[in-house]
Length: 512
Image 1 (cartoon, rainbow, N blue to C red):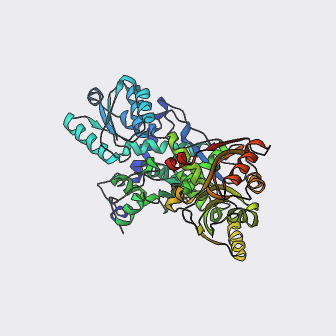
Image 2: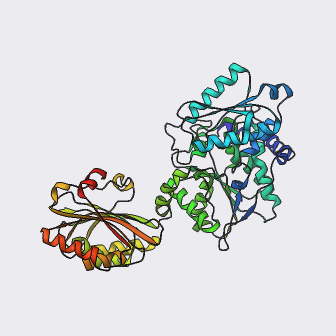
Image 3: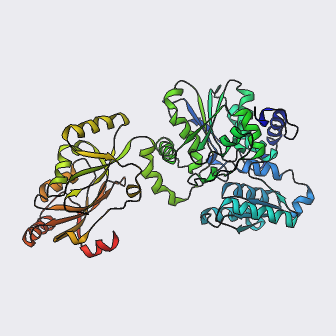
């Protein structure tokens, strides 16, 4: 048994935590209202707690305000210090303004400007943002050093009984919502403050509930702490879900999570992206990655927990807008609806068109990457959307047709869209940028009707969700006459293309 399983006077008891949550209910609603709880959709027994609709679009205001409301008059006059990559900083800023104290807020230099400005907007003249280090750990160390030097109170983002108690108030709102008993709850874990507080309250009111701790695949610091009997520092932490990117779980939160969390699971970044896509499709909600992590856990186990009433916390929506392209690209992979295949076909005129005609005409192509790199073999990469059970059928059909292929999902060149292209291998090139109706068969029809005399030496297309598709395609011909005939046909004849423009090969050479 780990040390957390023993009665340890060094730690507050479970009853102490329950009392802290009870007392926090008297404080947190001085500055904000409860957030809604509702079903994700009509077909699934999963409820989502909408912490994204709080004053700071995340739950962290609860713990920050509860802890800071306990400051003595002297401590308020001296001010507080905190370290955060975003949401905790906003909670401290909101509390500092409401309680008329000051806050020195340390954030990593890599913190998006949006989050820095949110802190300044919420705290006004009561906050001072200090950018220190390249990671949360760097900023945290600087904040601790400053706190000790200036004799100011440090407001921990999770490893503090009053902070944990404040976070637990969201579980009280779940119970008070009157949606009946919950059978299972999927709680995302970073430092563990929310998981500890919420699990404590849920276990008291739903004694048979199963609490599942959900961590990122390269963020599982709490599972490691519970397994080792105390916090351990991870060698590496993935930061895509930055709200849960904690190298070392808290000592107090580990003590509680060891008692409340029934089991731990991990989710990949792609699975989190799939959960974000589900929230967009069902609620028109876009959370930050960590905000969807609990739902990603439920999605991963959806089939095995059918019939159980489940709970997930949408713990925040303070996402950097720049993360959206990654999420869109990886959501299909995470839901097992998208795969990338690398084909091996002869490098000759008509080979790529043959592949499209014989196999791919009936599937939903969402990406196409191909560049001429040698004169004997072509290796185009094609991304396909399909139902998970359909991929085995597609692969069997490929084998029957004798088409050589391999799955390339996750390969670095595919991930970063590295498309090999050797301009020295082409003789009479014509590169065009086209816009066409985004419907099944539109691009195939264009190639079939206009490209019989050409070799396709470059193909760059990615589905963007618009009503039109855009592609950059390079052709090579055996003579200048054939090239001229092609150009005349494409530019002068009426086709399905909405727009077509020629691109000079030397320009393409520079951008590939």
